[in-house]
Amino acid sequence: MDISGEEQERNESVSYSTKLDEILGSKTYDPDQNKEEKRWLRREYRNLISTTEENRLEYLRPDSEGLSNNIARANDLHQKVKNTHEATLDSRLLVLTSDLGVQKARRMRLDNNSFDVENYITKLITFMGGRQIDNDNEEPDLNWTSIGKLASKFTTRVPTSDFMLGPLSVETKEREKRIRHSLNKDKSAMKEPEQLKEKDIERQENETTRNVKMVYDILGERQPINFFEFIINPESFGQTVENLFYLSFLIRDGKVNIDDESGQPILTLCEPPTADNYAEGLIKKQLVMEIDMKTWQEIIETYEINESVIPTRISRQRTTGKWLG
Image (cartoon, rainbow, N blue to C red):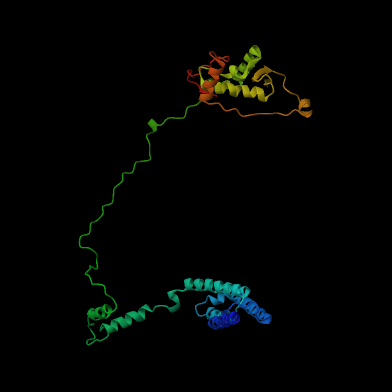
């Protein structure tokens, strides 16, 4: 019983496979396809692709049958395709042919089959009775009703009345009149540019240089001193930032040293390094310090700063009426 069951299943499997091959025909995937046939297919596809690319401009002409011949030839080759490599070549040819078909469609114009307007008007006048002349001095009226009845067979649009010259009430737009101002100005109202002389220019002192020197002198008198106690101005956050700015020049030039071995940043004056020091391996280091209003207030409370070491500067105002130079 088991043997007969296996034979029945085998027979049903063979029968199903045979029917499937009959349905799919030559399109069935066949990895064991004849090698010579596969080589021939690949060669034909490559030749067809190469020919299409070389004759691209020729195939785009309206009267060319190249694309139609390509499709017919590709259909014949496709019947023998049974492997993925040949199917890829077929897809490549199909894409190339489709792109050329789109370009050819875009190039199509009515100029290829030009519309003869004069011939159309002649036939239209004849249809409306314009060529039936009984009297040499008079031309018959055109029968517009006949052409209207003929046109009504091809459209369902309801006829409407209209005016050949546009609407009856036409409002004429009045052109706005613009007043043109004369370009000739009153010479009495014109002023000459102010002529400046040397005595009219007040030489402005470089405040940055002056304030850097002031900070250096004050530090020389108060050193060693805590970094924050030196630059913080409890009366002005803006001048605290300025004090830090002026001090940065002295640190950059190596005239001021920051010692933090004690756990606190201590400022002291020092001799600027020489070229020999840099040759021996001395390296410049710099950092960017960020300070805001909250940090400024916390430093004042932490170090109990009540008075600024660097005096509060008074903003200078120009009251002489002279130009600064």
